[in-house]
Length: 373
Image 1 (cartoon, rainbow, N blue to C red):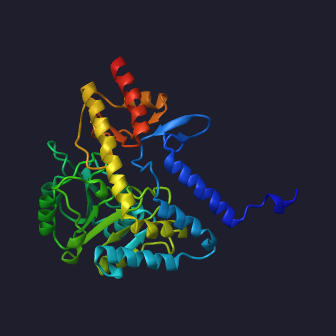
Image 2: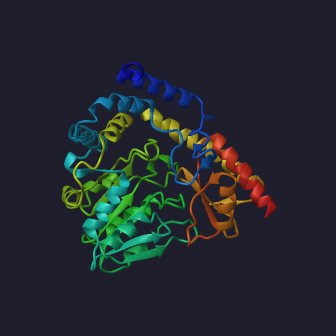
Image 3: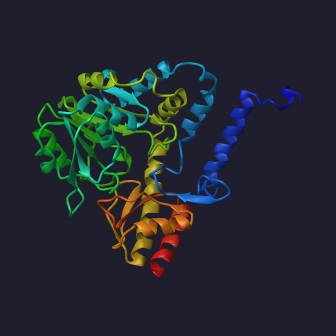
């Protein structure tokens, strides 16, 4: 075989990939837009709060342009993203730490600030990863139930704990898609002692529409014990690339960085993140799409007589008024994957807000299951 005849040039591959990306963006019914292709079956994937629209065109182009740099370590790109993040949030670069997704930020915070004598305090339920990381540090985790009325973090009860090294506040919260109001967050931050670090996870920040919410990144300058995590996995559509960061004081950044693997981010993720920061239109489109499709799902749920927790994210929790385990399984049988079971909320079903075709498929399967129950 003549290898030269079958070899594709980098320029040719870039051209093919670019054309494929453009075609996919214009055709939401393609596999990977309506569905995820597994073996020979199609599965509607609404289980992990991913953004089905994917990265922005600018990010896709940046990644293709970065193919030829794969042989290099990512230091220069990391420095560039660090500078962009610092400029965007009006902080100094030594107040920013990049991570392999915001998941790495959570792991580093647990490693730096929890241990056998420094407990972790979290809401119940909330994103579970940080509790797992704290257990590796042999730290006890105190779980404080969300408020029963609005599913807020019960911050007074979270504050009323002893020997706390780190308090984790996911806002908006996963899995409830609820927010804890800015007035309550500010009061909590004013009251917590300086020896307790507070990590506010703002992974779903961009989707919030409520005026009762605010990002606490501007408060970092006044509070030396505050860490705020962000990610490119959600609104920026880069969950598979793994890129995130946190903003904090230089001292806390150094303490977390001491536990970090060198060069934990890859050059493709960094290139895409740098490009994404300059594409505000992609963020606005993502918000609008999420809002419109979520309205459609609300209307369908109303027709069926179901209630839900008001969502300020790209997913929602539906109150089934019955155990959700069998419904999750029945949806899976119909090739619709939804969120896992949350033991403290056994009657609720977490569903990612996908594309309109994806949500039409979900609503059809859900209606069929619930009507036959």
